Amino acid sequence: MNETAIARADDEPVLVRPSRESDIEAMLRIYRHHVRNGVPRDVEGTGAPEPDDLRDRRKNLKQTRLPHLVASYRGEVIGYAYAVLFRKRPAYRYTAKHSIYVHHGHLGRGVGRLLLQELIDACAAAGFRQMIGYIDADNAPSLALHEKFAFARVGLLCGVAYRHGGWSDTVMVQRSLGAGVSAPPPIAAPGR
Ligand SMILES: CC(C)(COP(=O)(O)OP(=O)(O)OC[C@H]1O[C@@H](n2cnc3c(N)ncnc32)[C@H](O)[C@@H]1OP(=O)(O)O)[C@@H](O)C(=O)NCCC(=O)NCCS
Image 1 (cartoon, rainbow, N blue to C red):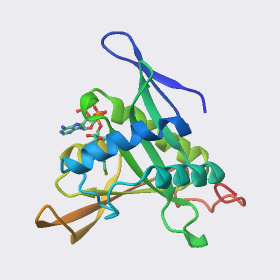
Image 2: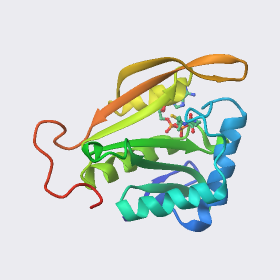
Image 3: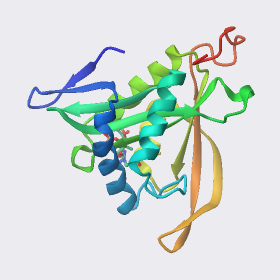
Image 4: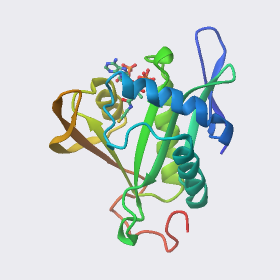
């Protein structure tokens, strides 16, 4: 994938590129800040990932052509986004599930929009037909971002998380990619 860029007010571009092993610590710092500060409330329930978890996930994704992207500004990683298989069983091989995180110091400046567009394009180019996201019901910025990119709210999972002393709901969002369900899949599955 080529780097893509948007210009910031100071004319320094924000670049989106595939992640590198050396980006992992910066990605973890971004993730940990958001988990500690409430939103998202660790929807996957796994706690903050350890560096090795993220490293392994990155390696696995490389093998399956699933995108694992970072946004960088002045050489610093200020956001990341990646997709994994929605489910491991073969029938679900055309459906991806994604996550996106922007550094708390760079929110509201178009970085999430840039990352999500690149992620959608990369998933479509890899042959995926559906994208799914799970979003905390009280995560208004993420819900609004996904709505902008034509994700529909397709489900509400009630009280599926308990943390910070309370139950919380999760919204499931979905959008189709490419031909969606209007045509059969290509012979080769994504990443095969
Ligand atoms: C959700 C998140 C990725 C958005 O990234 P961002 O760079 O701040 O978003 P952008 O500046 O690109 O904004 C894109 C759109 O998102 C929505 N949005 C962003 N921040 C918002 C806010 N505080 N309130 C409401 N909508 C917001 C708007 O629709 C916005 O479009 P607009 O600028 O035309 O109004 C970011 O808030 C984030 O990393 N949050 C913490 C981690 C997280 O919740 N990840 C998602 C887990 S599912």
